[in-house]
Image (cartoon, rainbow, N blue to C red; front, side, top):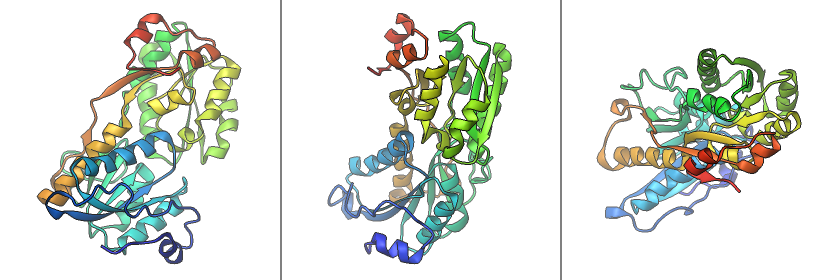
Length: 328
């Protein structure tokens, strides 16, 4: 396969202001099983720990299988226009497969790319996002893995650490289908728990601080897997510490950055799972149309006692002892 350089992408698509350089042989593992060699494009919506982990896990599956890959990795820097431009560029390139990381990137790829398989990961509800006809029978050239969170279990963590909590604040992107799905699940769970959900929406991460302030006084904040919010999660951390409100995350990377706790999926493993699907397509001839959307059942409890203390909460020793990972 021919090597695509960053300069080519810039000439072809001038609207993509910032993209990551093509990695060429980066992540390639050598001769490959049976001489297999592929060219794969990765379109990642924005850089943050969860999406980075998903992309890394995807590449690891090929390394573990000893399959040589020429990677063309690009990042839309959180801009839908950039995601669309990247997808259009990939559609005109000589690729064997495309991975789209996060819902907006997947929507752009599905719309522009029809001649090669498209896999997605870190997508909450593929059917609601218009990516597949159904999770069981995608029906076209697009399939992948869902990162639908155990929202009710995550919201229950508020009560586990702060039993008297009556209100939870959530900020999310109005344009992200995956976020809207999670907020609706949170509202349903909160009603059963006797907790009020206060919500605010943003168009981009620069609006996050103002949106958090607009929530007023709350006992806790919940961060869904919303790309604009997660990419600026330190803003949520600062608000939680200032207001002494518990911050519950939806994945481990948020806890590493200052959320107090989460029970969520492992995005590296989710990426690996997606990579195995890709290998079935490339090596075994399976068709995306017939491959059901997969989910992850591997949940991990991650706690950050120091962050919780800064938010005015002490994590019980029992929960710390049960944790899969404790952030020091």
